[in-house]
Image 1 (cartoon, rainbow, N blue to C red):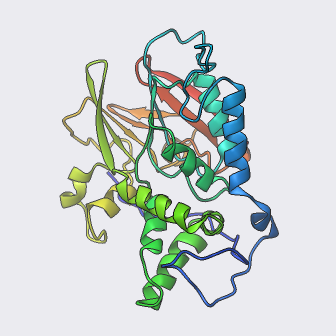
Image 2: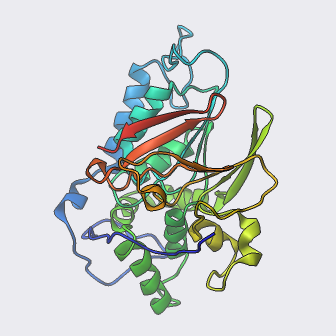
Length: 313
């Protein structure tokens, strides 16, 4: 096992307008890229809902009056299916294409292993879709962790801590584009999003086909007591600590599925693909990077062990 906390990318989009969350008001005028200002999170969300209605789905993937769901892939057969994705990083188009490719329906379950926000513009719309879809469950990723940690910090009480957390999330980890979109939400929506982030689990154990499967963003919490110093608690550890192939990690479940670390950093394979080493699977295939850097969105169907990929473009 290796323990890394590298924070790559640099967020450059910033805020020139919009109402600041009650715990994140700033007297500073923050400047950045114009394209971030032109982005409307509500536009993407409304467009997605209209596409569901045109396809015969309600907001939660329910069938229309004809009884047809409009979402079943004829090649996948019938019955409930369980899917796992990770690290969408604000790319809503490949996410929607993936849902269509797998034939995702209301009787299926999708687990997303964190990091749906940052780097790219559509993190808030994706969060809102997840919040409104009961059969999609999100784990806490390090990017959601940084977002809620910053929003929980009152600038009036501790300006230094507030500034440090803003720098870590927005400047060093691509959070500006998410923060800007968040500020354009109503106060009620902001409060709802923050409350949702506080409810996210860090690890989930599920059972599929008689197998016990542990879902984590970066690491299982039980390793925290064995970790080197530097993490303040098991939550921070679980969303930041990176596992590496060849670690020989022993755990009671039959399988562990991780996100967080783009697989090209572990295998060198381009374009990126799902990587398995023994009973551990890594599924972050670099959607944040974009197609030009070998990135794509991956998805696992656990019942059949099928692997799906979508271009990050």
